[in-house]
Length: 201
Image: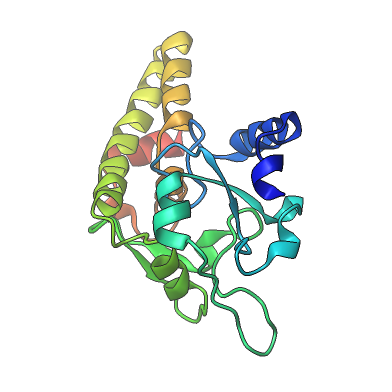
């Protein structure tokens, strides 16, 4: 039934809505790098077929995360029967994951029971391109923020708007969120002075 339904016009609309919810240019809700093209069942279809047609069970994912990383994995807490991984449409990953700007890797936030399983199930550190991509994003986004502030200061609003669009469409949108968080905490030394000045402005 799922294979038949996934080809219908109704599911084209579901796919479109999920794409609009994803970050950047329709990025995967798990890795934020690859283009999301698949409807992933957060509660895996093979293990929980009765959730096949539940809207809240759908996530927009790339085929690699859906078929190679997560597959049918969903660790469950035995007593509560709740998932032990972050569901990105319901939870803020920052409550469970910490971004290391020196390595581009995620670590589990102290006290979180979901951090390590989330990193493992979604392969957030095991695919070499993901930490490298996050490191690159941390560098590029700082430059874009500084350029954005400079263009606004000069009254070049059209150019500033183009930079704003580039930031919004950039992969690894979580890096931007962590960057702002670092700037507002005691991690100023990790950021370029012109980026900090841009955020202050």
